[in-house]
Amino acid sequence: MKRIFTLFCLGTLTTLALQAHAEDEDSDLPEWAEEQVEPFRARVGNWVDNTSRNIDSFFGGDQSAIVNNESYLRLGQEIDWMEGDGTGDDISLRYRIDLPTTEERLRLVIESDPEESQGTLADQGSGRLYNDQRDRRSSTFGLDWLERRDKRENWSNRIGAGVRLRLPLDPYVRFTSERLWDIGDGPWQLESFNRLSWFNNEGYSARTEWDIGRPLSESRHLRFITTVQWREEEDTLEYSEIAEFNQRLNRRSALRYSAIAIGESASNPRMTNYYLQTRYRRDIHKGILFADVIPELHFQREVSYDPRWAMTLRVEMYFQREINRDYFHF
View 1: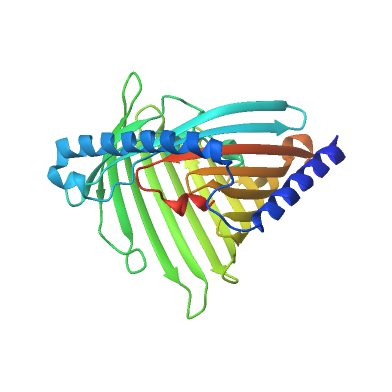
View 2: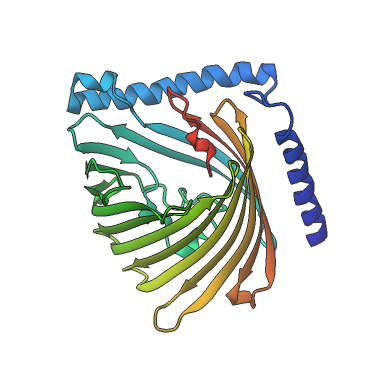
């Protein structure tokens, strides 16, 4: 079974890689499919944009019609296979309603899947699967205060407060701080992301992430990411180390190779999970429709690090009035 699955993964990646090196166009869809997708994308994208701007105008005024708005809706379908567990599939929905004109430094934000709802680092695993469906009542409504600072020059801070939209309502307070440094005169950069949160029903949580990386060429990038997390309800210090090599095949296709280690405990440190993963991502249609193929090997302490194969196939569509090709990045 392992050999068959390995050959399937290699065959799929080879086919997609050959496709990626083919003549670049804006879409892989046949004409009849494009005629169905485009009107649907435009209707939903306009609805997302109009809804957010109408709410924004109620709080912020007339500038809402012309200011840049980063609201979006993401609809995804993923099929997952894990050795020993069989096959599963799920539909994921994630949204963010951005209300930028409320005040110069105040912003109303409505979003699903806040980071704190994604569980422990062990729950999040390698990131192969979306975790935004773990709790379908995890949407939040809040007000953020932003510092207008360039994180290359100063710490850029954000303070937020609001409620999780569930019964009973779950108030929260969140503080985040970010910084970016150039290391010497070379190409290396170090980025720091830090977050401290309090949710009434779950208590405190803290997360710090340090990301050091450099471009190796115009199409290749190397990163090393260290994450430490603590959640009051678990009361365990967790940490992860990730080494990533990213390669852009062309303007619509990319590959990522990752090695991931997850551990826990400060008094008795131990590694609990290791992952080896390859992720292929393809812009199928004009920066709005994407496909991912993600084969993975998982080594878990609980089963004496015996390797388990996993495979995820995912298709996702983003809805905005203005197409944002940044979603192409992993």
